[in-house]
Amino acid sequence: MSLFFDFKPGSKMTYFEFGDYFGQVLFIKIFPSVMSDELLKNLSDIPCNTTISVHTNSTDNSDSLEMVKSKLAYMESEKAARQQKLLQQMQDPDMIPQDLKRSISQTNSLISNMQNNNQRLFKGIVIVFTSARTEKELFENVQKLMGAARSLGCELAPLALQQEAGLNATLPFAKCDIEIRRTLTTATQAILIPFTSQELFDSGGMYYGLNTLSRNLIILDRKALKNPAGWVLGTPGSGKSFATKRELLNILLNYPNDEILVIDPESEYAVLAQNFGGAVIKISLDTKTYFNPLDITLDYSGGDDDKASESPIAFKTEFMFSLLDVILQKERSTGLSGAECTLVDLVLRRLYESYFSKPDSVMPTLMDFREELKKIQEPELQAEKENLLKIIGLYTTGSFNLFAHNTNVDVNNRFVVFDIKDLGDQIKTLGMLVVLDQIWNRVASNRLMGRNTWIVVDEAHLLFNNQFSAQFLKSLWKRARKYGAICTGVTQNVGDLLDSEIASKMLDNSEYIMMLNQSPADRAKLGKILNISQNQLGYLSNAASGSGLLCAGNAIIPFDDKFPTGTKLYAMLTTKLEEVMELQGKNTAATS
Image (tube, rainbow, N blue to C red; front, side):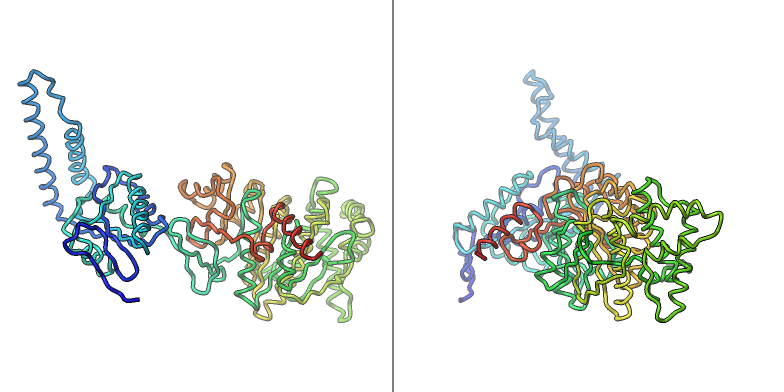
């Protein structure tokens, strides 16, 4: 391709040719009295090759004020002359043209702003250059640009006989030889400064969608945040699970040494795990997959700022308070009392002192806990002892004895999904706690190897139904950062989450929060907790699936992520029933 520029000198044509392209330079000929900040955005959104340049120079304030006053004096003189003529014709002197009245009013307002509101005057021009392969396509682009400008009260016009100078003015040399200038105020000029959208582009980060305002990529490195723990919040159908799996996909591809552990209450992550060589562990009353809630290692401690919590036994006791509180609330509608906490602490200390004192000891289980509980002789604790024995019997020797056995699962895989869908509502929260405790053991081991662990807790609101489990989750969230773990809570019950004081504080302290479509009540609560403006909250109202607000550190960015459908990756990520059924049907047909 030979490169040449043909500006057609002497011709009335307002476009030029360069190489295999046709180009045209336009400028904003007329500005509205009230400028909209949507102007540059609307012009940039037109799907064509476009370069927008703003050239401006400030003027001396005293000279500007004198110039405006002289213009006002001229208009007042014209007004007086017209009124005099109307009086001579025996007509109403107020019948002067509306344009003249409006100009006088606007000029008076401008003088007031310059004298009282620190407004200055600028001389500027806005130039728009567009190009296309054919004359027809160029004409269509120009019409679209003119229409976008016209919708906001502006008029775009070609630069007649100045196309070459106009093209030079769009080059990054900050030089403009075009003499056409419009007078703009500080407020109008500020609207023409396009650098108002916040961006996220971390070196070595992962893709999280497009900035809704600028259409730039959002690249975030959660590991670089002070507290990388976070949340994915949204109403049903807003795209929470898809967005979470989208992030897991990026982790699998970008961080080959990191591990991913998912608590999956709705069996939504199995397909992704299976396709990427992960392991899916199904936990239900009908399986022989066991996790012992009393498992403990010397590395189990949380390393929290609270010295008492640095002991593995103290941390395990905190967990057992949560576990037993969930059981008791299911059976009698009230959780652990103070005396019962004392009793549990006493039993656990005896069990673990015996375990750690003998090198060949077998890890204690809930069955051992029950047997040790029977041995308690303290008179003041006998009533609590009998109550606990009655209730935990169902979970040790009864039908719900799933967690009364030694752990028989040892998965050596970097991507593990704990599928607890078939546990049922009766013990699902209990199952989440036990799995979360097992995950913490894995986190402690990974820490010694210098490996990061990504933890996803779907339906996390279930753990905020009682105080002990909420406190345990809060402690784990806080400890995770020091152990190289990055936690993500996912929930559609945003209202229940925000009603919990503990959850609200966890949200406030998390530096990664992905918010998708929200109900009006939840939007208001989130705005108050996270200091989000009303304008920003608008991106959470009736938002399309996969769109919303991303809070990362100090940045709050509107985003959308349109993942291409009809791909193998999309089939692994989607949870929409109709799409899943369609894909299953295609797979069945292909197999047969």
